[in-house]
Amino acid sequence: MTILRGRIVDKKGEPVNDAVVYVASAPVSLPDIGALTDEAGQFSFFAPVPGRYTLGARSERWGVTQIDIVVGKEPEQQITIRFGDSEEGP
Amino acid sequence: MSGNPVASGPHKPITNLAVTESTIEAPMFSAGSTGYGDEEEVEAGADTELVIKPEFEVAYESAVEFKVPDLTDLRDIGEASFGEPALLEAVIGVDERVQIQKTKLFPWRASASLLITAADNSQWIGTGWFIGPRTLITAGHCVYVKNSGMPGRDGWAKKIQVMPGRNGAELPFGGISATEFWTVEGWALQGKEIYDYGAIILPAPFDQDLGFFGFGVFKDQTLLAVTANIAGYPGDKPKGTLWYDHRKVGSVNADKVFYAADTAGGQSGACVYMFVDGQRVAIAIHAYGGNTANSGTRISSQVYANLESWKRD
View 1 (cartoon, rainbow over the protein chains, first blue to last red):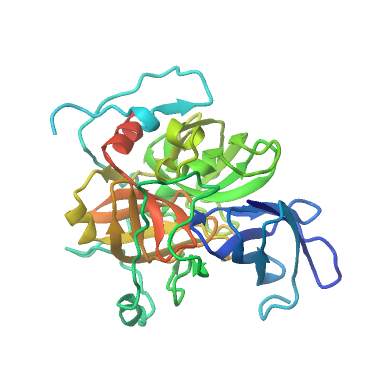
View 2 (tube, rainbow over the protein chains, first blue to last red; view 1 turned 90 degrees about the horizontal axis):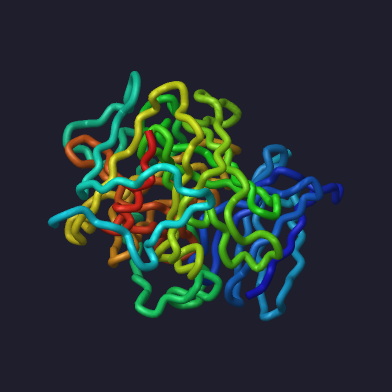
């Protein structure tokens, strides 16, 4: 199991709080719950098995974006999701 | 079936509060109520809600394959692995969800947006649905975090803000914060996906009679012939908006119902229901995505017994 510690930032690298983060696709069945980022734009999920995951994030200001990641066998993995690369949002 | 079922074994209910109200026993079908005022129209003999879906539904539905996982040796959710290790999606194929605008109507107002505060103060979104004036059913992982791997996070939620009929920033019935929760030992102690269901008990009912879903226990053959309807509050859509989808039930086993209806993170706990003589009757509690079919905890006789015992007026 790997802990995914993430941070969501905008184009300027500023943290995006109150964004929803969710697992859009995964190698295994996962709880269909969404995490809210804190004031530092941080969130954390766990990935139960190694493999390819797609994390989605949605902010009222920035819209939706997704990031594909490969999870290995490390106990912890850092992730940064950057808004602004998506087709949606300002 | 003779007598009333009593949940036992891994279905033995547990709560974060001392029990102050007695449980009850009931038959295997619990009727719902439409509550006050208007109801979303239902066509005679319909098995879905009367909302317009995109036209590509039929073409895609036949392409969906259901691969039922072998649950005979189910491990904890932290280890559970179903099917081939491919990239699997909760929104299956084309996104067919439809946004519900008239959320003040039944049955939409009988579902609620949940803002969950976990033990470590992290916040999460989910969905719940009423089975009585003070009781909402949801996923077990919405009321009791299990196997998170994060220090201080596992355990009972600190509180859950319940917002029925939410439509974006609009809360037509307001919100109530709840701190009494129930789940079962199979989830809280063992973390097994097949026991992933729970309840939220409100300290008081909402001012208006919002109505509630019926629920029942049905045979495999019945479930395999019906359409699974699901509405919830997905995190990939504008905040706090309610979205609906429906698809035929793909497969069932003793503990789970599988369907290709689209969902996304935030819909955990949503009501999976069918129509019986024009009445909406829950058959499962949506809990999992990211597989070849999304899935919910089946309302078995044991689950039914707990839902009945968790009802509060």
